[in-house]
Image (cartoon, rainbow, N blue to C red; front, side):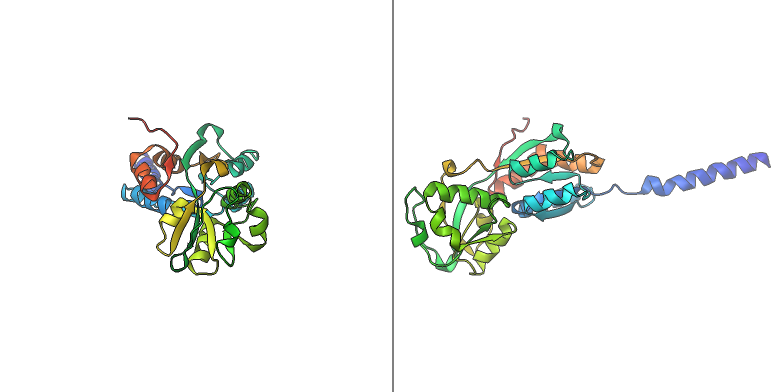
Length: 259
């Protein structure tokens, strides 16, 4: 009887462990700049097809995401559209500094609705404000990275004072692009990758690289990241499959991959 009792106890322990052993891994939780929406969504699909749980992707302006993470939002990975918001989050102790990587680069372009394009030469002193009528959309300067880059470029051109009263600041670059696509704004300043992915806008011109700070997307793990989150971060940062997606989307890879 004692032996039978021991066997029953052993069996109950084994059965209790089965659900835990069979429980799938928690999905990676990723907070990323809105301009990464198409590319990271495609990369997440590749990850899922490889047998992993579908990552939970949260896209918004870098400022919005950084503030949510500072407030305690649960996430494994953060990819910002400029260094300032990664620095801001790092100052709160949430970033695993050893994993921080300058992942991607981008370019800044002037766009217009496809059916209302215009021509202008983006050089200092050029009459940009006179080249189109109506509003100019971009991210909110000083808050949304694309808007900050845009303000730097407009000041370099000497066009900021004339265009600032006509500027519509949005919560992220995808919102600015949507305003131009719908004709609510006559022009917009967005990233080259966003313009490239939209058939409803025309790229009027690319801003000279020297007109603004380099556009850099830093990526990092957050402290307490799950094993699945760490694995997905490594896939995004180091795999040729992810690099190919970023390249097709028009991003510049800043990280040198191993041969």
